[in-house]
Image (cartoon, rainbow, N blue to C red):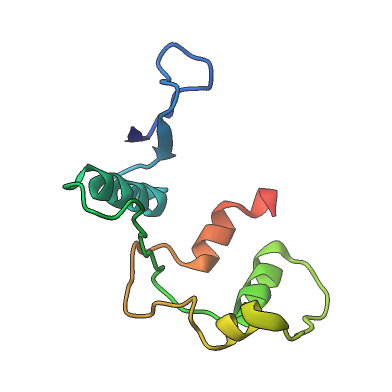
Length: 126
């Protein structure tokens, strides 16, 4: 079970159900809805008609495509951290996979929260 609520019950409380996944989301402000929307899509897929396949892959993409450098620069700006960004090649099959852009799905845009807006909401834990 997946639940989206403005007020997620505390762990161990009588209102919280074991095995449920909770997403904090506020439809009035839009805060936290990106995670809730993705969670809802996964639940909808799980409730669909059973297929012959044992496993199902769900592809999810954000509203923007950024390079690692762009993400690092945004992180520095939001956190106020200093330091030099050093680009290093990632070797092997994983490096080839990422350089080819195979981890990106620019045609798929789920949600509206950008990387910078996410960073700004979580800056105390970065």
